[in-house]
Image (cartoon, rainbow, N blue to C red; front, side):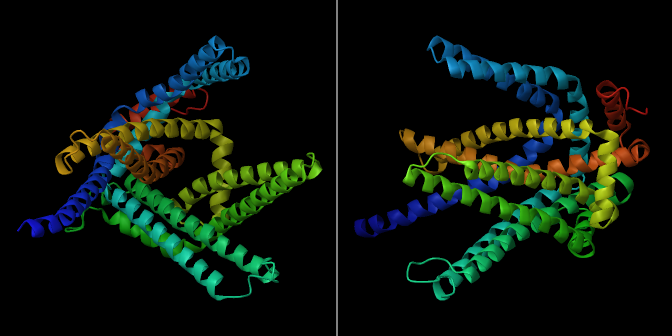
Length: 430
């Protein structure tokens, strides 16, 4: 009897551990979406305000501590950055209600189509599966094909470089396509919510309360608009590969210079400049695509027509669009930090009940950090839904503001117009 019990102890421990991790992962995924729906809309303004005030205060404290310890360079730069942070907060403080109003409307649209949270996790799982398949394919090619090496010194052949370029491009391109299909789907769903109020209240029985707009929008994005999405994604994918090549070239150049003890020369400057230019081009292309695919999801435009619409949007709205994005991202960052802390605490409490962590301080700390990272990772998945919805709300309000007034809660329209008047009184047409 004693022998049998001792043999079963590891199995019991394994079962408890599996139960703990499954419960923690599932609970974090569900609680993250619930907290985002409940807290983000109610405390959006406060989260943005904290995100604007906290960094300058932290930098000022760093400057004071550095000055006391006679670390003058760190104190000087920390103080300069703190002043710049205060100036930025002062300049955009009156824009906070506008960003919060857009965020509130976006969350209202998501609340009527909460199946988007499920879709977000499904897309993430699909992306992970694709990366695993890609790694398996690369491993197969490297281990069982000889065209990689050119000679006995294991130098890569020209054919090997071409295959490597194509494989890396396939990884970046496919990831971009998956993300942009998801982004375009959300734009279509929010557009349906905005323009077709009757369809937003429809539900398919037995389908988790999801509206038909989710499947319809996904179908349009995956088939009718697939070519436009692939083309825009290809442009970003090529820039990502070029960025990787330039960064690797710069790294190799630095290693050669360190081994040969050479002085920096013109090539080092050119590599640095080229990496900077490619990185900024990649960022600008991704940002442009995020707006272009909103028009693709809303109206089914081809990529070039959507690009022209984006150009018109920025010509008319300009910095208001960019500042709105930045403030929304700040609120999401603070929300991510809060959910991460709550997930960590929940993991510790769950660990005490399931794993009996009494007296195991190191295990409790490890579980806290694991739960916090899991919570933040879950937020990153879900925040893609929120940012895409906010971008779509900005476009819909620019295109057809009266649809919000006539077909939805009048308070949403009133709050957005009031915030628009305060933030941009000269541009507001109401």
